[in-house]
Each structure stands twice: as structure tokens, then as C-alpha cells.
Amino acid sequence: MSDKEQIKKEKHQQRQQKLKESIDAKVAKATKEQGVFMVITGNGKGKSTAGFGTVLRNVGHGQKAAVVQFIKGQWPCGERNVLEKLGVKFCVMGTGFTWNTQDRELDTQAAQAAWQDAKAMLADESLDLVLLDELTYMVSYHYIDVEEVVAAIKNRPPMQHVIITGRACHRALLDIADTISEVKPTRHAFDNGVKARIGFDY
Ligand code: ATP
Ligand code: MG
Image (cartoon, rainbow, N blue to C red; front, side, top):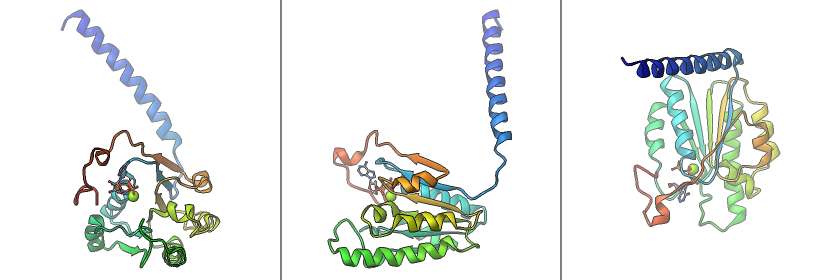
């Protein structure tokens, strides 16, 4: 090895050593064990996918998860087809809300019914993870009272994880979240005329 290469190698080792020390110090500080409340928001693609990915991760460790879908899309849900077989309970907002409905009374009733299911999950000690997919819209439309959601999340079993997905998350929910990820739409195929595809978009 030339002198130049040797110096490069040593420099790399020193940098990695420093990095390791800094990460080790941070890891040593993270000692709390608690359920995490996470919000996945923003206008980019990947919010529900990330929520369902975490459900899969949870179930893969033999833990118990449940899902409420606050928007029933016009398409079947690929994740549901798999996760239900693995024992994950799904509640899907009934008659209800899609982007096409215009009946506020019906939508409110459907949102409230789904919220009752969600509240029961948030009080269920046997659940390790609860995914409330697209809940943010129900709060934006005032179909569900944000203070009720905040209270249910605060009073849940202390080890239970909760994930809320959806755009434009209410400030009151962000304020109590432990983890917030905002997905940024750098580019989306739809804007170039590409249709939503089964097995990729739903
Ligand atoms: P995904 O379910 O793919 O993780 P998401 O949950 O982040 O997406 P939503 O706002 O719930 O996004 O929208 C659901 C549908 O809209 C999906 O089919 C997704 O591909 C599409 N979508 C998401 N973001 C965008 C975007 N920026 N432009 C156009 N379509 C989008
Ligand atoms: Mg989504």
C-alpha cells in the first residue's frame, strides 16, 4: 500500500471511530421504554405504505396489531388481504367517506362509527400497535373532535404504539407525537399521467 493510500485508510478509520463514539453515546442515552405515537404526514407518496410496513414488522415479531382505515378507497387494499390472514383486525369506515361523497351527515356518522372502533383499540391492552390510516382528514373535516383523539392517545396503554397517517395533520396531534415524519413529494408519476397501479399504489 502506498503512503497516500495508508493515510487515506487511517483517516477513514478515525472518522468511523468518531462516528461510532457519537452514535454509541446517543444509544446509551435512549433508555426509556414506552409506546411511541407516530404521525406520518405530508403530501408525498408513502405514508400508508410506511404505516402498513410497521404493522408487518410488528406482526413479524409475534406482536398484535390492529388497523382502522378512515377512508375506504375505490380499490381493494393489498395489505389488508395479507394482514387479515395473519390475525390483524381491520375496521374499515363503512358506507362512508370517499372523495366522492357529498353527504356530510352520512360521512359524520361513518367517521364516528369508525372512531368508536379506534377508541376501543386505543383502550385495548392486548394491542401492541394501532394504525389509524387517513385519520387526519376526519379531524380536518370536523367529523371527529381532535381533543377526543388527543385524550384517547394520551390515555392509551403506556406500551402501545400508535400511528396516524394522512395529509395536513392537526397541530394538536403533532404537539403530542413522539415521532413525526413528513413525506415530501419530490416527484410523482401521476403528474406525468401514470395511472394508479394495483400492487404498487394499492
Ligand atoms: P401510499 O398509500 O402509496 O403510501 P400515501 O398514503 O402517502 O400513499 P395518500 O394521500 O393516502 O398517500 O394517497 C393514496 C393514493 O394517492 C395512492 O394511490 C398514492 O399513490 C396516491 N398519491 C400519494 N401521493 C401522491 C401525490 N403526491 N400525487 C399523486 N398521487 C399521490
Ligand atoms: Mg394514505
